[in-house]
Image 1 (cartoon, rainbow, N blue to C red):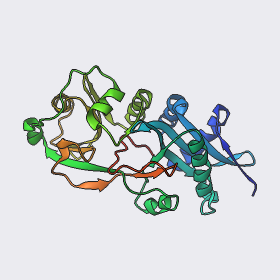
Image 2 (image 1 turned 120 degrees about the horizontal axis):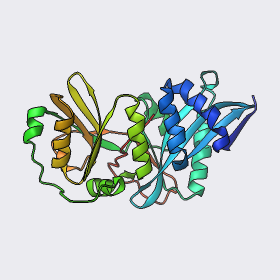
Image 3 (image 1 turned 60 degrees about the vertical axis):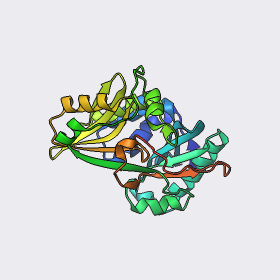
Image 4 (image 1 turned 30 degrees about the vertical axis):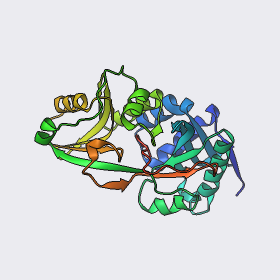
Length: 275
């Protein structure tokens, strides 16, 4: 087995698409969206065995407290090539390149709890958190939050800065727009207002609002109540947001400092996650 590691470019996309589809068993529409609408917003790294792409991962560019950062996602290896240490070597290869390009932090969201220990081998710590609030429709209708209110023009990046303030992965407008389309392929709905944005999915008479950013929570609440007849709502959000003050903090991903100089903030919020 003679493996070669490389930073992928557009010529690699057809093979990367195939690997992604095989590994994650995703809808072709979602796969196409990831590569057609998000490829310019990330750095891709892959491993070849001859002409066969056997492993890949992706670093989606962003910022954390003004420092360059990325969100590592789509880590994938063909079944026959697993348990050979290939992904570990690819992670080190990609992070070395990211560090050379000025990235200070690397963030990721493990697909399952067992992977927390795997990524821990590479220096990632479970210091990313979130809170979840479960509330009935009636409670949401009467919910009052004495927090931020603004006539801020609609802009994903500004909404994030207004809502999360600090210690979060700032994801740019193109990524958020892509994510809305990506999740829509799986039936996820989006609500947009002048000062709010949210993604939610419905199941068992519940609306799971797994991402939201807002300058005015009352606007978000009103739009959600209009867009769904769900009798229960579950919100996931940043641990220090006042909306979640009575909710329990839980781990929500991992983070690693790449330069060894910048201290890792506590309770970092990743935001929108993918695979």
